[in-house]
Amino acid sequence: MSLPTSELNLETIEGLKEYGFEGFLTVRTLRDEDCASVPAETGVYLVVRDWTEPPRFMPKSPAGFLRGQAPSVAIETLQEKWIEGACVLWIGHAHGPGVRHRLHQRIKRMIRFGSGKQVAHWGGRYLWQMSGASALRFAWFPTDKRESDKLFNRVFKAFDERYDALPFANLEIEEQESEE
Image (tube, rainbow, N blue to C red; front, side):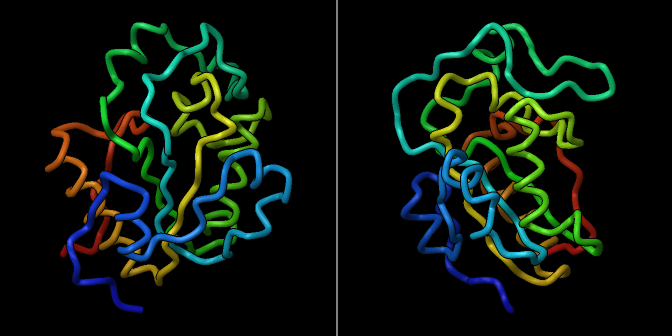
């Protein structure tokens, strides 16, 4: 599957849909259905927010501990990292080869972690300290490994060009093998 040649619009859910992202299901829906709607393929996934009011943060995250480390950070840290006007809050990559590194499992693990389970998905932990996190939406773009690396880099580049920052819940980024 080849990637779209159109410009990637990260500013709205409609723009992401036009580009080819699918899903846009809430955390609540995906948790209730055990992520049955998410394909077991490689690709890129996003966590998006479809409301514009400023976020409210909780002093303590309900997410799971990982290796004894608490997921909570100071509210001031979250407020400083927040990007006003951005609908994309997290960019994730499910690049295989094993089943645990496919869209279905990566999203499922992330949601389980946010629900308080001790699951290895520390990335994105800032999301779960937001009030109303169960209304956040997951979107995905299934593609083969080579194209998923390209798309992952493309999405990060587009976000950086627009906001001059990483998405709210991405604390670091590693360039993937395949260059544009």
